[in-house]
Length: 90
Image (cartoon, rainbow, N blue to C red):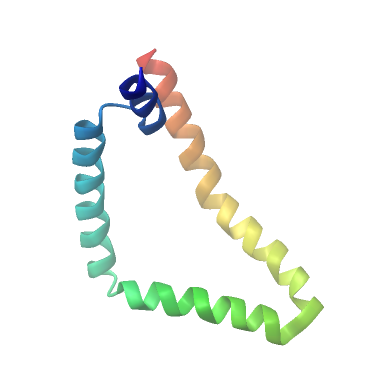
């Protein structure tokens, strides 16, 4: 019963999910390395983002909408494709 809940939460067996995450991490690592992006670059980028929001005050609301649209252009198609792939498995 507990194992069934864990499997449902993870989206598969723990071993299979771990293997999938290792593979995806390897692929993303290769891509980020090719783009010359390090984990610290991502961390500092996020930190700078929040510092800019804090320093700019309410003027940033317009930029947040812009960031939302830019992110949505990437996230929504990926989500849609993943849902299509999931529906094909059922």
